[in-house]
Image (cartoon, rainbow, N blue to C red; front, side, top):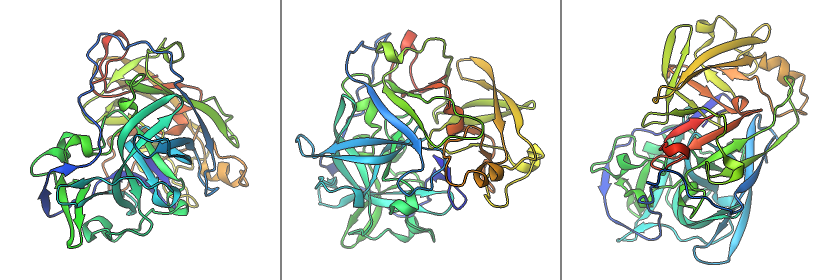
Length: 417
């Protein structure tokens, strides 16, 4: 996930210090549901969830794609609809503002009643912090039971430790986050996986166990980490299809589309003529531009522009009013060659327009743009293309989940479009 707010932001984990290795109790998912069949199991369930690109609940979000997620107290009919949740194919796990949740959800604790908390940082210095709780998650006709989710705390019982805050600000309000939460439906089953289950955990471990005496970094078994809820559905669980209509080059007030669960499991999610690009263990493939290979490229509905390289390399200008976005003198066309680990390779052409002109002429009317681009990051690695939401307009984009079998026996992680 990478977004432009005051600048631009991207999920990244802070380096942490002390280590706790403790067993956990409570409700959680399972990581053993990999589908080893040659083809996904057919289903006739309601698998289509409405999504919309609009200005978001703070009325200032450019290229944000939102949906409504229903959460329930596990095993009960006590439920709540949470609107304006950002759909993010660049992360895993459901994260909701605690201020948006009225249910009393059970938190996940260890055998000593220490509460599991998570810290997720952004490259702009902001972060989210809060407990991991268990909820049934429902979308369309699909339901995942006892899913570990994060409640982003507005007033935390346990203050975020300094190793989490790291001088940044907490995105724990609608105005700061720009949404009521984030629905991570990326390529992986958990948000951290085996790395955070290792003993000792990695230095970039986001999980803590907290008590009245403080918080310590924790080794967390995968079933208690935040889960991509899609892979926990009983059917249509091997990935998702995001389908958005085309929008004019001058932008549109909104764009209504579909988040369709499953790949090749029903008539509405067939891959058809889409090309499949398998990825590395980080969900990345290779993009070649001007003869240079960028091996850490990915597709991300949570990024509100196509982020790539830098203005100096491209010979264009950054925006003065919108730092982090490009403002070329005229609309420019770029062609890259994307190649999956499976050897599938095809050219992709996209346009980048002057963000300042688009947004200045917008007058708060248009929020969906197909031609916004920006720097891949100042002071960060720039060896990638982040194909954000502009890439999705007018396309069917498939996100194949790790260890889950898709059409023709292909096993995730992969992208297809």
